[in-house]
Image (tube, helix red, strand yellow):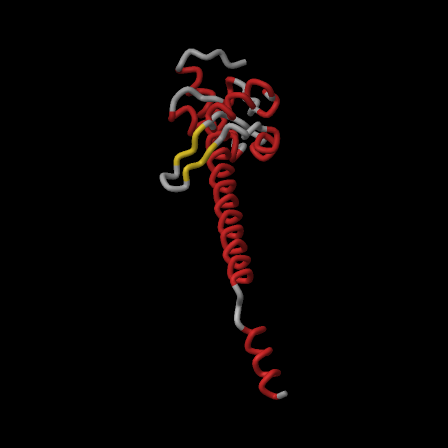
Length: 143
């Protein structure tokens, strides 16, 4: 009787083909899930960068509303196809997500932009005056 018990335990401890096959399927499934998650993260990061460059203020909302069904990421090369089309489409259909800027908030050159940012940040009378004088020197009417 002791030999039968030992033999039974040995059979239960050794993995059979079904167990090995199941484990392989599980490992492959986990690998595919991780690969898909990595692809999703890569697409999201690229979308956020491209959306900001395109002037979208509400990037998270734009991502949620965007149709990304045509976007594909090649993990081998890191290239993403179809993302520019998705961003253009979200701008076309959901324009309210874009940054609202007035011409005064978009200074034309670097010096004007620096003066504007300083005046806006400090709210100091002399900085504001310096910005206004610069604009006057460029031919802008200041009331």
